[in-house]
Length: 133
Image 1 (cartoon, helix red, strand yellow):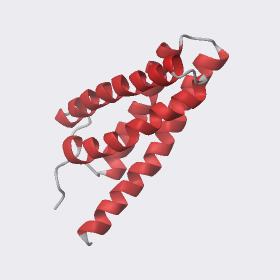
Image 2: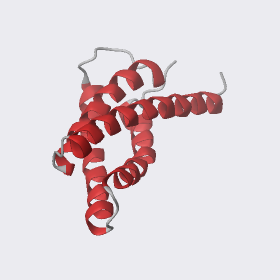
Image 3: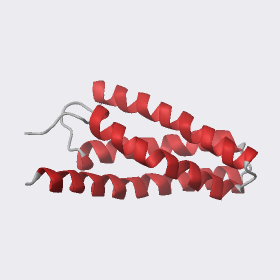
Image 4: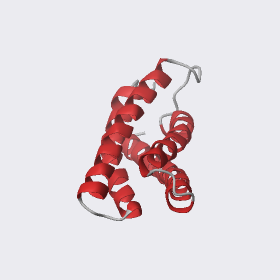
């Protein structure tokens, strides 16, 4: 398969998985922050963590088709990356929610959007960067 087509397929798969991760993240965040009135930042950490677990499983097996053991150096890189992305998304959430005065859910959407491109690039080239074949 053509290299450009392979990259487009990976990006499309990443986007599909990302939608699922975002739905998991938003569902947990909404349940905790809106309905149970948990602190917005704790809800952010827990929602993001649930989405991250979903992301690793699906991106490892489907998007990047990484081989090897589940608990591996790839998992460590993935966790480091996602801790950084959690820090970035929480910072953006703070800036948009606390400083910008946006409501919780729109602020969460902005924070999620900011991390998507950075996350794809780092997952593609650092976490799951080994070329197949």
